[in-house]
Image 1 (tube, rainbow over the protein chains, first blue to last red):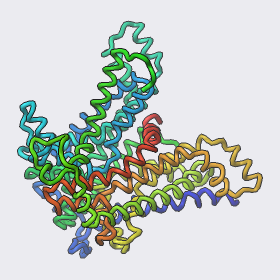
Image 2 (image 1 turned 180 degrees about the horizontal axis):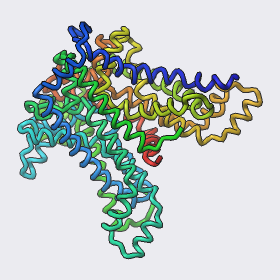
Image 3 (image 1 turned 45 degrees about the vertical axis):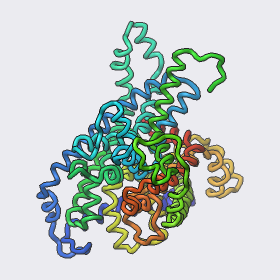
Image 4 (image 1 turned 90 degrees about the vertical axis):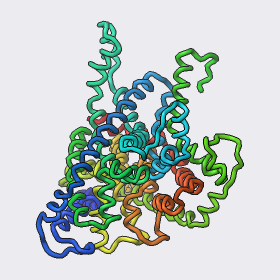
Length: 284
Length: 280
């Protein structure tokens, strides 16, 4: 009798906190989004009126497209670099292999505000050392002078922060591939490229997909990096979804479109979360 | 380095590659720190100087004068509260999930697992959370941010600790229960001491999550004395403008606790992360 209630009792406080602060607000936000909003107060019920206003905003489509370009480029860059590093570290032993992982993951534990601030100092400021180093090799790199270079800087900062995360996941995956597979392939005379293409890559499918889902989630929700590195500029060039959402609500106080946008993004996040749950193959 | 008398060519190349990797990872941090020690005149020198300038702590003094200490103190308290609350709730819940059977257990655990990536969704969560906590009257209080931080990082803590409890033989706690120990006594005296590495990893995630949070922190509290360190740094960008001395000084100070925790617990972080990758 006693132990029947103990399990739920132990789990209850943590579950309450998770439900009340991660799940409930979204439901409440959805309810809120169906009302006309004045000075943060709900007034009359207007159904999907706020959503209509949001979707008729001519800025929205360019922002979404920009976010897609940014996310796809950053995920690709992160995973390509992480894969090359993982293949390299996998061949190293002892101190070097371990330290390399630790060093590469360091940018991931630094706050995004600090990382973005430092990149801004190095590359955006007129007297930054990054711009000086580029000028030494004859490249004029002034990130805020063009839309493309601003976006490139944003992608570099984001990838710099997350390569370590991708690396840890891929390396764990590499360690899990039985060595007999590689030996058999080598006996059959497969080249290095063939081994990578037909053994390593397929065997790393799950960690690659997990990393893709988690990285996508983190890029489309990271406000700090665009906010601090470029502040969305020049013009709208780096104004991507998370920044747009944040400034709609807390700089322009346009909650009438910010709330439905947040709900739409939440639904997008849920889809990615479902993908993640399938991939990690959770078990109770 | 391992004490080998001679390094082969391959080993040398590997070592050089490792140094390049290290440089790319830490260069912005080191450069920020060097900048924070320069006088305002040396700061404006172009091309920038790596060596040969006068060192000064004046930018740090300006931070102290503009209330940075209060932000650091508040962040430290928030982070400590988050770690304690997260580890207590997390280990009790993980124990309940692993050692007891109850209705809807699989469903609740599925919610925990999905909350790990869900809580990365800061931008989408912050507006609903802000409306919700405002309606409940829970914003702008000393407890607001620790509770939010704990909720965001608790799912990961439960996942890591449960992974470790799974490995402890059930016979151990059953024997203790037969000897008359209470369930919580078993958790405290037998289970907890055996999963210290997992607690270290979970504690580290909780600490980093709390210390580095910006988005929620910037909107959930208004009062200056409740403002944590990341928000203070962001506000300095508007306040100091192009004065990079105090800006890089604030960034350097904010990194120190993370580096210290990372130095001691970094290897747990790596194992905690790879746990997610190899399942399935």
